[in-house]
Each structure stands twice: as C-alpha cells, then as structure tokens.
Image 1 (tube, rainbow, N blue to C red):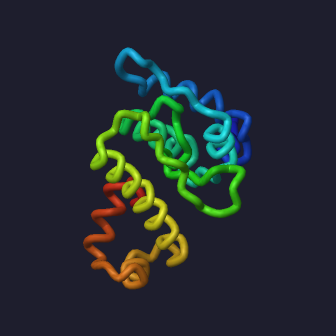
Image 2 (image 1 turned 135 degrees about the vertical axis):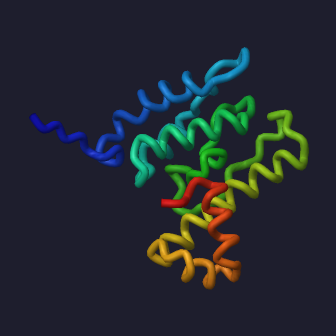
Image 3 (image 1 turned 90 degrees about the vertical axis):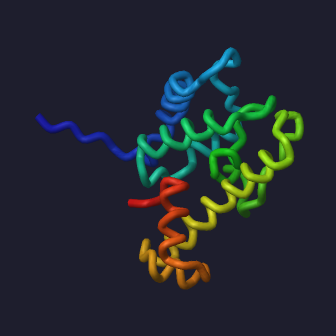
Length: 153
C-alpha cells in the first residue's frame, strides 16, 4: 500500500498543530512554549516551506533557542515576512524582551542575513559560485554563512 502525504505548503491547516507540537518540545525553562500571535501564525501558514515539516521544525527550534519577547514569537525572529504585508519590512523591535543592545542587534542581523542569503541563492538558481559573485563575497564565506543559517542543500 502506498500513502502519499502532500507537502506542507498544500496543507496550511496542519501548520498550527505542528507549531504547537514543535514549540512544546523545544520549550526550555519555566516560561514554557512561547505565545504565537495571529500574525506569526498567518506568516507560518502562508510560507512555502520548501524544506517541508523538517524546515518548520528547525525554524521553531532555532527561535526557541534565541528566545522571544513578552509579545511572543515574532515573524521577524523566524526569518519570515509578515503574512499581511506585501513588502518585506522589518517587524518592530521588542525592547521589553530584556535583550542587551548587542544581543538585539545580532538577532536582527542574523534574520536579515538569512533572508538575504536565501533570496540571492534563489535568484542564482542555488548556484553558490554565481550567488557569491552577485553578493560580492568569497564562495567559501558564502558556504560558511549557508551552513550557519541552515541553507545548504
């Protein structure tokens, strides 16, 4: 018997259940799993998820490790654009999160870096040499960044 499961992008109704499951598993400390605002859930449900369920799990585990503010899990922390916006504008910074300046800056840079790399790799058809030339960086450094952000395939 053969069972075919459609990709996650074709079943957005499953995303909420998977988000709850993965965040419960990844939650550490007394606070438990983070609150997931409606805008974040919408961004998660509308994302294409080329890495399917494994990519969703990795994104949520990374977010749990990075921490989250009192407002809950923001799409920017996950490296996702807001679902309702048509342009990729950064989400407002949560200054109540308790992060130091350096931690907040590093977090925002990491989100931007991952988005930039994903876009430049997509535009280059996943050709690392071409993407590195277009970005103006060494191919070896691009490989390091891809590994850092989990973009190698």
